[in-house]
Image 1 (cartoon, one colour):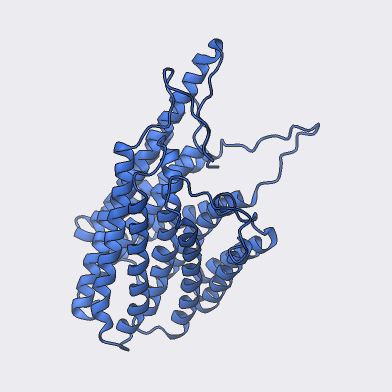
Image 2: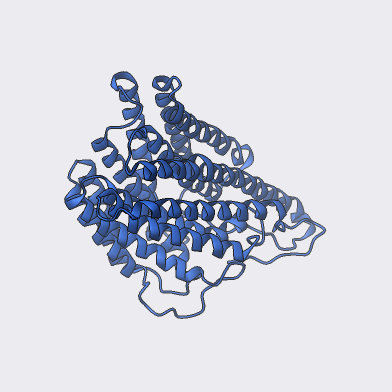
Length: 452
């Protein structure tokens, strides 16, 4: 899957043309990835976080959902999960696939147009309700076609054949298995969304999923898509970045199996056993990734803030919190506050923290830039995100369940902090793209070495 960009070393005269073609293809792939990232940042900052903050302000003012349409909340969540996280993962996935000739841009560009158009139409239909009976299935169909194109492109990426006498394929690495499971989760979520959007447009009276259906959909999206993908990339990158041992295969497989079982049980409509399985998988994967062990060297923090290892571990702590709070919600939630806090710990505490921490380490290199624009902005964005998430997760159950009335005043503060963190992260990446030094070598420039 994802490898850092290929920077060619000086070649003999006869190979210059070949090297130039390789560099040109790498540059095209990097530019395509920039487009995915920029659209992801747009959906993260405006339709996602800004709308979420607006929703939170309205909820806090009325001490409850009040007259806030459920479609607005779904529009915010769709922009975050599909528009942001989905765009990042699809972009990195396309970048990681070998491509030749026109296929470097043709399939990724088609997928990009379908995906961003689908996410944009879904947000517009949820918020404004303009011809939503037509826009919901069309947007879901665009997203489904985009994922089919991605899977079609990925199917041509074959594992290398063994160089030994036999031609047996080597076993698939564990991190690839986890990423593929997450990709299957994304495909399942997109199909689920398409079917239910068609049904809603034909039979529904509102432009939002019913609560019980939405619970199943969110379990599939969060624990079936986002969690396995992040686990897979963690297993691939963190042993090198954090100077820790490679994942324990047995424990990692156990965590993945428990997570999948939880998704299946949750989609079947049994939230209590599903949440127990989720929490057990969260604890197990922490042991599998050796977060409790002493590093056997110095973490690789070149070009990023040295606090990077701390925030990665905090992200996995949030995953455990999300699992445990989901158990609490399944047994005790009355007004939705505990469920909301659990989902926030998963999407913001775990997923967003991992993106904010690892993104500055890998995305500049993937997009052909030497390093992130500012280490300080990286730290500030993570601090704002962590503080806001802590306030949100701790105050939301207290407010919604009527335990502490003052908690309603804390919620807007948490939203402002998270919005600030998101804007700092987005600004840091955009400044990196605009002002960062290119990592691609031209014929007249001095050679560059690979960055690992």
